[in-house]
Image (tube, rainbow, N blue to C red; front, side):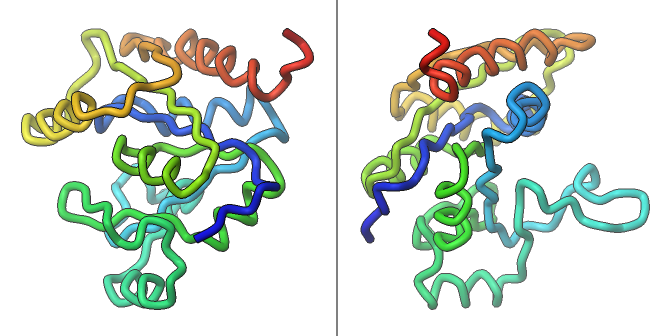
Length: 194
């Protein structure tokens, strides 16, 4: 696969399950309006409760939820960037190449990824800047000991992040964390300002 040279950089927000990656990404659209596109993840997992509104509509901003058959069809048609290689907590995660390229032609991309996917994207020629989010504070609760162990093993295996930041889990702790992430992105989004 050849990555078109006209694509913008992709910011990969990496961290343990439940570390606030999606919350931080959403905040970037307020702090840097018109500069970013979410690179959606295609997955066969069911939406979580917080991804369904009171009217039963699924929030598909970060994820494209599909059945096993739909996922297999995308894989068969060669549309998935990762080739169906990423399995996390028993579910497939991947990215639709056509959608991803379309979004990266227009703007910088941002999404939550796991470490092996960052390695794969870089090996395919995507310009990926990895930002590791470490959760801290009394309100952070790992999803499960098994998931925490899996996350720790992936972090240890690498790759090394371009940037590191802490997401403080305390009342309104995401606000200073979001400002830190916004400052990191600012160096790439507006290089002439620095």
